[in-house]
Image: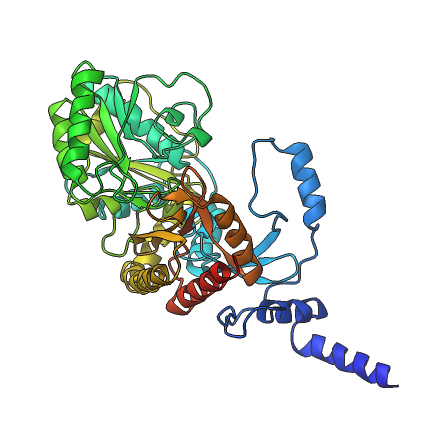
Length: 476
């Protein structure tokens, strides 16, 4: 009888709350086995759908069989993520995780943001695809809105599908416009993995041994690990030397991220871009800002990363956060530089398609409406302040850097030698996942935590990340 009463009670619960599947998962999102009581994921008023699809082992087996062997996955036991809502993700068991990496710095406004979903759905019902051989208002409206966010004469937009594609197009523009071939990028940079952009990328883990063309990598103005510390003028002199001794004296262009993403959230030495842009212009080149990760208010202090260095580039590339998860990228430049592409047919089948354009325009509107830039500044300064306090407590933290919600924490076994704490970082990475936090890893040695969440991430989330990191370090 007692068992029947319990069963009846359970059935009643499943009807009135959500479903038996989700009752267990509800508790699994809130209760942890042996973790301190204060380490609870912040409350969130959302119940995921019961998941009825294939489970992790079946998916992993299929992935290994049918997808390329170059794919890698995070965590010793890979996660099967089945649903997302704002700054949170849910696995196949309904367990909730704080997403502090935003699908590799791509989900800007939040997972499945209702206004962006609505814009995508409404456009999908009317017209999914037509290409630019016909007129459609979505691409024109989106281009106008994007151009309005740009300083100076950066008024002409080319839409593509990814950051690699955007950087490839920008490099072609630079070469056509200047009549020069040589491109300059920074060591520790990441600008894509296509056969052209792989040359601009300067981290051996991401480079295949193929011809790179005329590409030069100069010393990285890294204030923490760089040979000249924060001395921008010494790094700029290295670039000048490289042009004088390593090229014909003329270059096509220079490209840089303002805060290097894959390289481990490395912010360039203050004042560097101003000096370098002058040198590059004198050598006949154009200057390209890669805003794939730093754009759209993520740095908090500015809408674009390059603005933190007080410069206006000749060409700006963007992707990732521009679409909140849609395959979308763009290149914005001046009418003069854009005109060089008119000598031939330049066409992109999916670039600026109606669905992505409608979604992209909704992203811009949501960022403004929800004041995400000032939110990033506010939450980011709180996060950085707490991480810097944690650095005082734990010797293993060598550096805390970044701005807004573009943050890096570098771990070292020896602060003087700055020896990368590779093994320890891997252990903490797993521990954070157990606690319900998903961060990114970066840097050549994988010893940097990249904290770059959706821009709706709040101070409670920030506190949870820092407290969990504190606990993880104390357990090493």
